[in-house]
Length: 370
Image (cartoon, one colour):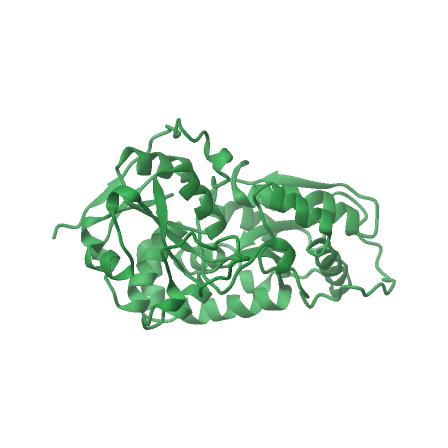
């Protein structure tokens, strides 16, 4: 088999489904898996961030405009969640200040993360990011920041990763997918995107295929990748989060072949959609892959933010993800709050990701991808 690497940079947008912003996928370049995800109102729970603690702080915060950095362009999932969260952050922070959103585009998220990392640690600069993308970027590239040092606030939503295939490919499930791996074209949003690294690491962790067995078709963003799928240039797309996968399934002649989670109940937003769940597969390291590549949109700040300010931020965040108005609005706009998590949970999974992906042979594989 000849290894093919095709790079396509087209600016066409799928006419039948509108722009990538309409799909809510532009700027999403990551994935992830977990278990039993349900709709927002049923998954909010306790984040461990001190909800209900009304102890008066000795710190006067915030004292000026709070800025949320989005490391991608407008119109995508990160941008949508940041803009949905901003007015509720204004509502639940103790002082009457404005919360704005700033898009810092470049380097697949590196530019925005670098700006946040180097900001003054006074609590007035935040960013929304994804744990898996951030960790693999740091391992695979020469970046000027350390995610472990940043001041995490909490994960607003955590959704499984999903494998989308065009109906024309006729993939019946995992075994058929693996057997035909060298016949399929895999769309990505670009080199180093989750749709790229996720496929490579899935093959490595499960032992099902090697990177050279896969034909990647690299596009210049999600919109172009979706256009390529509709034109028949690609057959498969690893989409994170699965909530975005639902949008792709509805917009294209495609199906969710595998969702990287345990089977879900009838009350789940995913019920009846995937052909197969990774939790039903007796595949070595599949559970680990699902857990570590889960798409976690989390808020964080620069290193060194004082603990008293962090406590205020985390208390506000805890109130936001339990605010019924916020939950209803996010659900109505197709951005449900699924399994939100605390700052400690973000740090814990990030530590496991660095331990697993930062060790041989994974580290060399990720660096080779970039």
